[in-house]
Image 1 (cartoon, rainbow, N blue to C red):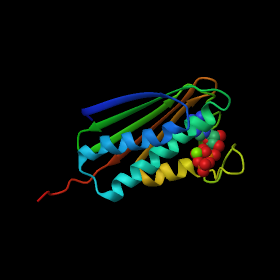
Image 2: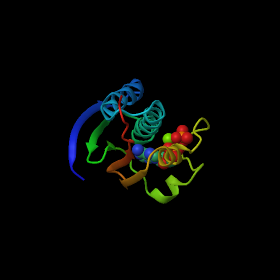
Image 3: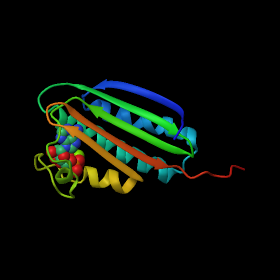
Image 4: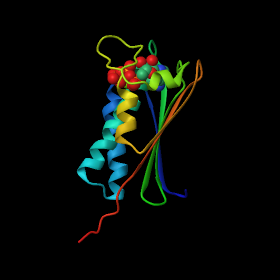
Length: 145
Ligand SMILES: Nc1ncnc2c1ncn2[C@@H]1O[C@H](COP(=O)(O)OP(=O)(O)OP(=O)(O)O)[C@@H](O)[C@H]1O
Ligand SMILES: [Mg+2]
């Protein structure tokens, strides 16, 4: 799939950057003329992915997060959230609904939410090296009038 437009953002794993990343993704996605529902779905998925990088990847330090936003052929929005943190030893288990290694306030629903709000979710991770989450969502073409 040809990349028609892109943007790369790098930011530290500070909790304030969750809102920033969500808003930035929404601004980028706006170029595809999404509905309010589509934009809210994308924002929710980005929020879950970036929160995971902030909370789980770097539990006791501030680390680097990179978010890539891509507009691909056929109105496909691709979002990559990458960290260089602790990584995930068993990705299939981590993706299971309700599975969490976090404290009581975590529901273990982040990956499940990303999966349901986006068309595709890929998670690649190496313990000690980091995690890359790739999500895709097709934005319906609308007839503007
Ligand atoms: N970027 C990451 N780095 C390291 N571990 C991660 C990362 N993302 C997810 N995980 C692991 O996968 C588990 C499941 O993630 P998921 O987002 O589904 O649930 P959660 O973050 O625990 O809870 P919730 O998202 O509902 O608050 C986490 O508890 C954590 O162990
Ligand atoms: Mg989560």
